[in-house]
Length: 219
Image (cartoon, rainbow, N blue to C red):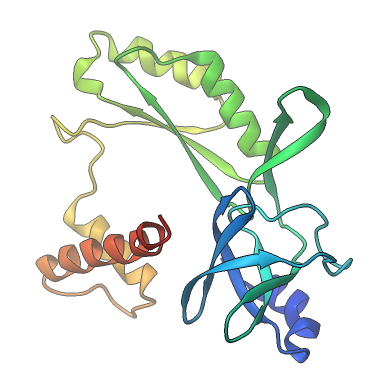
């Protein structure tokens, strides 16, 4: 998220009345950005500030937006702290940034057809190269006849990553009441966890819907 590094990088841009925003969706020729006031559709200036990134924005980028009455224009893409990138199809020398400024990557693999060791290895390597910490999530453990072998396969493909088996059917890997309370407290910067536990559950559901709302509105 926004931190002292990005605040320092944005200081000069704030002086010329640009507003900080984060890219939450990128489509061909258009993007959505989250301003303090809400999500907006943005366009990209023909000449971006050379002090920032030169390519098109990616999801997760922090940008400086020139806010007008009828338009929102990206004038600068702040230098990234890291980026998840892959080779462009058919262009071996060019990279496509999939996401920027990511701290944590969840690599989700189903037990129904796997886990696929090569896919896990590629995904975790992509995360490490982009400056993020990968965590492997093995879903549908209730369908796996040999969980220990599946875990060994995943851990062998991602030896430096945490591997978590989960199941919606059996409840394996689900957060308990205490964990939900601590998560809500951290997200809302509360001095202590909310009480009672049902209040924390309600807040967690509300936060989930609030986070999804800008994405639904942009569709």
